[in-house]
Amino acid sequence: MKVGIIRFPGSNCDEDAYHAVVDHLGAEAVFCWHKDHDLQGADLVILPGGFSYGDYLRPGAIARFSPIMQEVVAHAKRGAPVLAICNGFQIACEAGLLPGALLRNDHLKFVCDQVHLRVESIGTRFTSRYHVDQVITIPVAHGDGRYTADGDVLERLEGDGHVVFRYVDAAGHVTDAANPNGSLRNIAGICNSAGNVLGMMPHPERAVDTQLGSADGLPLLHSIADSLMSEALV
Amino acid sequence: MTRFRVAVEIVPRRGLLDPQGKAVSDALHTLGFSTVSDVRVGRHLVLDTDAADADAARAEVQRMCEQLLANPVTEDFHIGSAERA
Image 1 (cartoon, one colour):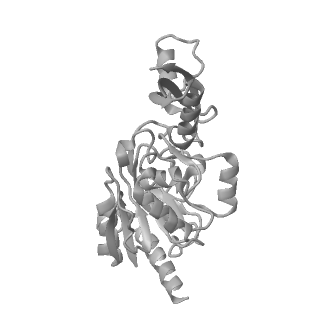
Image 2 (cartoon, each protein chain N blue to C red):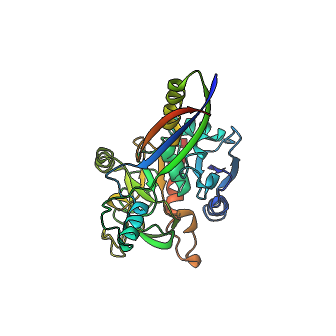
Image 3 (cartoon, chains in turn blue, cyan):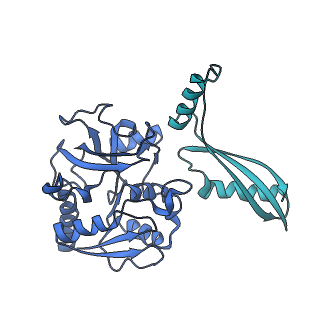
């Protein structure tokens, strides 16, 4: 598996993603500059966290027009996997790869914390290594993470099993106190209808080593590797 | 072509929680402005753009709002009049 990590001006989790993929997953990774049109043969594209273009206008609004995004959209349209983390999630929503939008946290403060997520769906190529309702610990670090979408979009996401992660307490219960940003229905991560684009505010790439608090993000990367492997065998 | 100056107001859609607006509203209440019932905080953009006439300038800004300046999921926009810049 070859992973292409997109670098925008202001990306700051690109190195974390590289470290997780290369040193913990054991796969190959390359950086793809936002002004290029070359994904360098990547099987998986990661849109990393950060503050692309300084969050000017709205988070992700300008990055969406970077040249490389034409390639990322084409990659997604082919059905190839895209993992959009934090600012990457915001960019993916602005680019129309995922429905909805990420708004300013309801309490107006930047939130930097370890949170509990419940795995809502293991039928995706991103979550096959988890078990249903598994509670995992993953860090968040964002100021604009409040997931919002129209009511019919929310119903469709829920009905199709495309709400992938939800903020919960340690016991796995959906509560307001466990919601770090006011996201509707405690939504922390969603996938598109084709199931090949995952967007999430928490950072699985920063949860790959128990010595640093959690390795619960690693099964996500392994799940994607599994899915690419089984595609290659078909 | 003439240069026009067009102002655009972009505000969070009514019905969506606007925490900035709520914070401002709470502060106004603290100051005694108890008549205030709702505040929404948005952005004000002023664009200079060349167009054949004022209507064409506003139509062009409308397209800019739909494609970039406003998020169609969460924001509403209002385009003011086009004045000669």
